[in-house]
Length: 218
Image 1: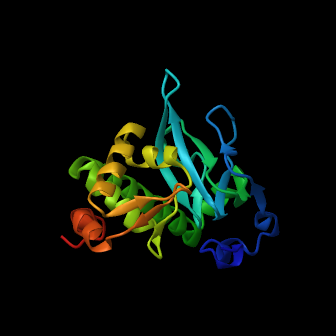
Image 2: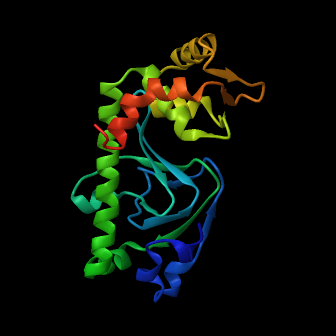
């Protein structure tokens, strides 16, 4: 996506200083808990993950942000603090909105509506994902994940660690799931590490309760 195609562009195009693009390589911090910066970022292209860190150093995946969304310590504007870091998962392009400018923009009806609609949609999405993890088996959830990521019968696997984080399962359990799907003739793990779907119909049948839940078909 380019800046001109984002939903925020009509609201900021009159501010040339806000249209400057910042490039981040993969696995780079956009914001950190320890940085005393309240500026807000907006993701033009790429993907960003939001992580919290426990007292013993364990990382907890909180959210995954796709393009055309706000990034930063947004909970502050709701009078809260989630104490999270924002880290690029892919090479990403963002724009930066200084805190004072952002607060001024929030006083305008169109920008305020855009911000709260975007962040509220993400909160509902996060809540629904948490419900999904409690309502369905890991096998059903993994089947749904593979279907969502498959193109031309190939599911590209960029990071096993990311999948484990996303599904909240251990690496061992993930490999056990893969082995069972292979035994059932539903999918095959390629030498590249990617997954080839051999029986999409069977996979869809397993994932159907999750699909119905996520797409409001129940």
